[in-house]
Length: 121
Length: 108
Image (cartoon, rainbow over all chains, first blue to last red; front, side, top):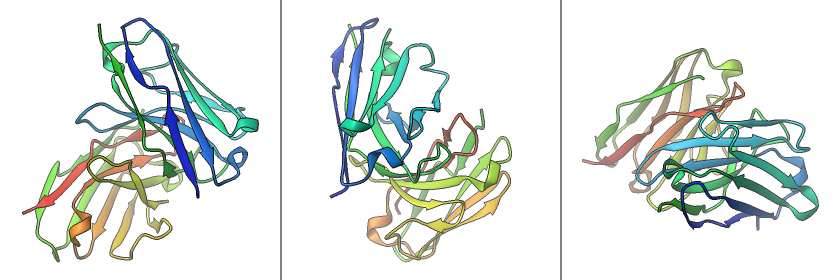
């Protein structure tokens, strides 16, 4: 079964760090670009960051640039998001999503169920 | 950043009716890299349409996409009960990917 499973969310104080993971199964992980997308409670979708199949291309949204780092380990079929200097406005459900092929410029044809990150003192 | 504006914010319709959702981009969408997603309450989004008009795997043909440049439309020809949800457009033609704010299709 093709699956993406996020983990690592939780409650964290402003200014602290958190690392999210996304475990992929059922497909050739190293053939596809991957992305993180977030959704604040009751709000719309916001693309956070994307990474090409070989980590050769990485892009961040303006709201997280300089604070978040995306990475992947193809040997472990895993995607990561290191989140530093967290702010209250980073509170959201975080989804990992699979691109339709190796290219960064593709729609997202599979999504995980998400992990909740709450930033609060 | 290519800002996507979806309208209307909410569409109140009955089963069997036709739904027409709009997505307008602030800049031309490169290579027509425009997708539509459906999200039901408590669930992750699901890809419906990519490349403006290509249905994703398993998506019924009552869903269709059209448009070019800066103006795009998602049409649901006859609403089924399971189609009441929130719909988002997304452009993936520039390095900063963006989503529209969403259109909620709810029961009249």
